[in-house]
Image 1 (cartoon, rainbow, N blue to C red):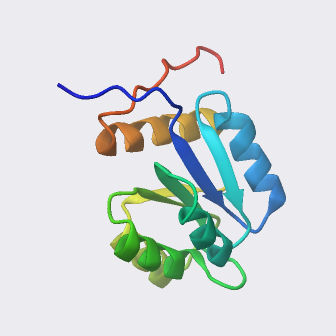
Image 2: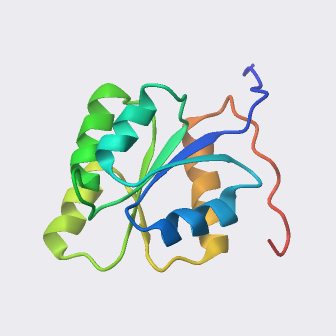
Image 3: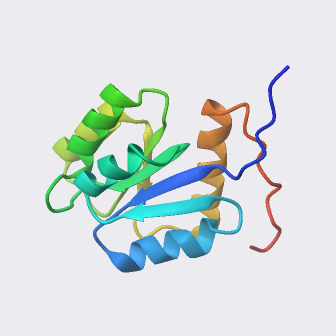
Length: 138
C-alpha cells in the first residue's frame, strides 16, 4: 500500500527563455507546483533547497546547458525524472539527450501533450503522489 502525499508534485522548469517558463507554468500550474530557473547552475542551487519531483530542462542554455545539468542531476538525484524541452536538435545532441532521459518534448509543444507527458512521467516514477484528474478541455 502506498502512502498518499498531501502536496502537489513540484516541477522544476529550467529554460533561459522566460516565455517558455511562463507557458509551462500556465499549462501545468493548476495541477503542479512550478518552480523555475533560467540556467542549469541556478537549477542545481534550487535543487538543494526545494524537494523537486521532476525536472524539465531546455538543452541549449548559457552557463550550464541541459545535458550537463542532467549529468549532475543523475549523479546527485538519481530518482528525480528529467524531461528535455528543446527545439530542433542535431542528431548528436538528440542522442546525448536520449542517453540521459527517454523523455524529450519538442518545442513548440502542444499544451495538452505537455500535460499528458508530465502526468505519465510522474506516474512512472512517483506512485506515492496522487495526481489530479485530467481536466477536460484544459
